[in-house]
Length: 254
Image (cartoon, rainbow, N blue to C red; front, side):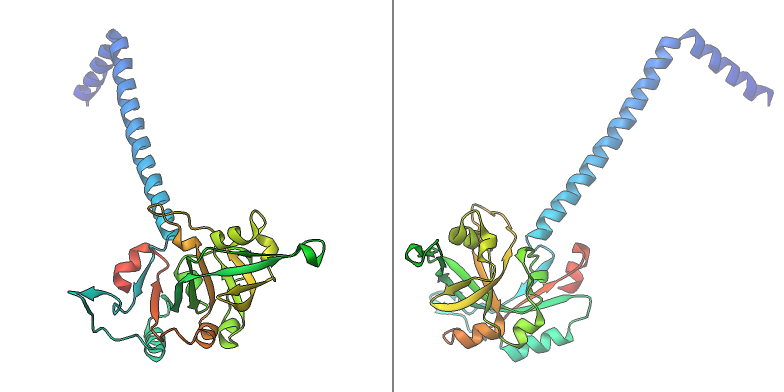
């Protein structure tokens, strides 16, 4: 015990004799630890921010689709279409913790138009988008599994799909082309998609650009049951999207 006390006494004496060196050493250690903690905290915050950003872009989901449109050596591949009955059966058998949605592609080069009303009927004028709008028929789980949020209006419901209601949800860029800085003015208004009339039920939040493109904001969504009724030219070739609540569950879901 006396040896330990003597060691402590000598250590304290050395510190008093070299006070400046002791203070500098302590400061170096404190600054080093603080810098390390700060760096680790910054890295963790950046990781969370990146995860949230990619989640909004749909990284917490994966898609199952037919590849029949792809060509190999000039030949169309022989993958069969995913029929509605098959997609529905797949959805029924997936675990409840996953969000499964079904969609069908109506077209990639559609036009959307609306009529802006002035103070008199003579001042009415039609506004039409470029023919580069993607139109999808979707079910009531599509917005969640594809990480879309509603900016204005209401969300797509099971009743919309069950009753095949003539309603649409406009991407932010489509709404901007039709109504400029007042997209909310489109709510409840009638728009035409390739000449067919629908009532605007909601405006989607912007997903932003990816590699210079903004395809996610240049979309129009309508109930899948209405799409298959109104656009008889489309094939019953479903796309299945599976979403997970947490990114760490994605591999297991796949």
